[in-house]
Length: 101
Image (cartoon, rainbow, N blue to C red; front, side, top):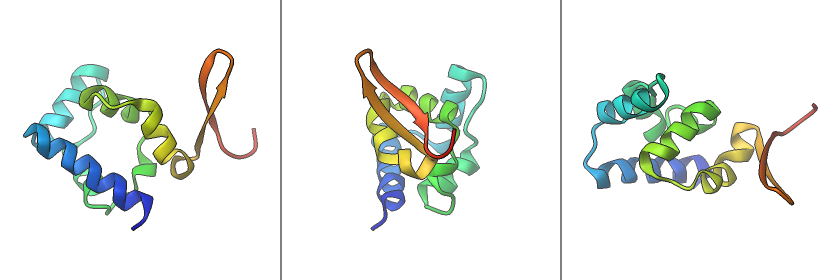
């Protein structure tokens, strides 16, 4: 099982646990940030027809808030697939893109 498969199943399970529909997640992300993750896009992510790596950092943060996830754990899980890496320095965690500056 690839990490994407694991994340997709986990995300679907978290939504089901809360009894939320795809539309409800869309509405909740829209209320938070003015930009909702469409129910179609979310469905494609949950069924691994669209890679979670295609989620913008803004939407990733919105999902973390809506689901009350630890964003640092999400970034560590998805970071390499999203072209991001989490670094820790004296002041805390820093998110940096992978690759040339």
